[in-house]
Image (cartoon, rainbow, N blue to C red; front, side, top):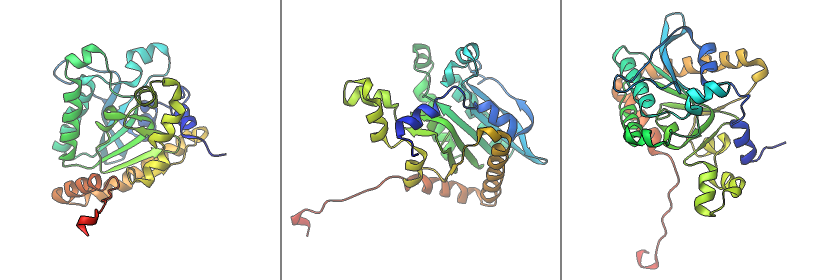
Length: 270
């Protein structure tokens, strides 16, 4: 039975789904977690460091992690990173570029943390800086949306060469609740908003926002992660064969092709 966009949204938000750290811990070996943005502090919502996809195959990983119980979710801001989280991510991306390591990101967030303290510390600037720097990062970037990809909070880790989504993940410019409140002044119309926003992995593939959809098989999670690792390694090998200029041009062209454009011809133009 086909799920509606709203049903997929609820599935993407389910507490039973594996967190970002669960994917990292199964896909990478010999993990070294790294902390702090060197400006303010550390953000537990961003789980990041260095690991090996295989022997002799190091990579930098950056995962948004929601936590697994109430206490860890509070500690991790329910997977909503603060500015220091995005700055930590950018610090590790620049480090990866320096040492010629690819970057692998796992996204699962409602969006960036929207508290007053985040705005005081430059939330918008941190997100914008990540997007800007990722467009010019001279190393391959692979992103997997494992749950919810919410707005700029997700895009700050998804300005990548290749983006994949799990089959029941969602990716949206705004939360359906926020959209419903703006369009209809009624947050109860969230199901209608989810349908209008075209948030599903299938929609994203049709719009060429993502390269592929990953089948979910949480009963065989290790096997599923092995398949993801294989795809990531394959993409990294292909992208690493490109020159720096070709890599950046390919990334630029990828984003330029998004969307559809139409032009209405007036009678005077004929």
